[in-house]
Length: 321
Image (cartoon, rainbow, N blue to C red):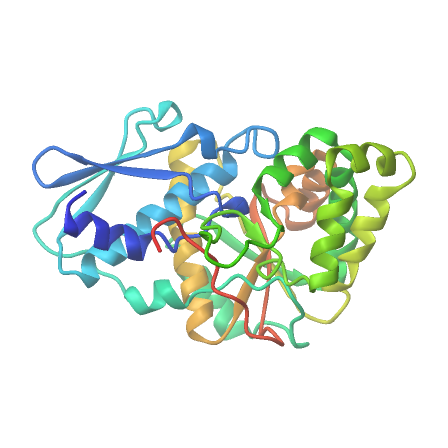
């Protein structure tokens, strides 16, 4: 790998992805260009069968790659592939000038997902307008109250933890076991610290999701208990934002563009001291996705709560660290 590509990946690799799977792959292509695809081993076929989250993540990565290229003064632009759904996602090709962006490498490094408690308070109208403008028409942004979304989140959590296939896939990306000193630390997936769990909660979750234990506890209401454990995260006066499709067909390219806008939105919020917490399970569950669509009167593409975290969130690990 060239030094330039390694530097671009180190910065762009901070892009968000569901379960911190980091599915993107980048390889040299053509004269001074790069090809973007994804690693099939890093997909979520059970939880994300339509690849909505996958293409949002790839779009966010494409935006991060362009921001990183501008920071390194490498003039690039992105061209979407002819068949993104088949792996021909995009090419980064040489441009006459660097990508125009308000953000830099420090913004990419400073963005955080915070899954713990937030201070009460709704997102100001002025910042909502700024965050909406970050999509540049690729998607809309709807603001609702955390308490109003709490019932949907609870239903979606119960559905997730009641489904053995979903739990098995989640378990594959959880990094809850402590790693002995001297051994490599996890560079992907979700650690207990990233999930804002205490040591006790981390060990308990690891224990109850073990296959043999889960099979037994599932029959006696484990899903309801696990959903109840996270219910308090939305039982305060705060804001949830929903990214909505602008209309028409939502295909891979539309999701890729929405993913670019989503990263710009999150970087905008981060500059003002706000963190975000994805609530993708609400859209992954058909029942709650339908209820959410009725609430926002549009097709929801992503949903997340936003606010000022009470405790500074951890910096999640990356394969390119």
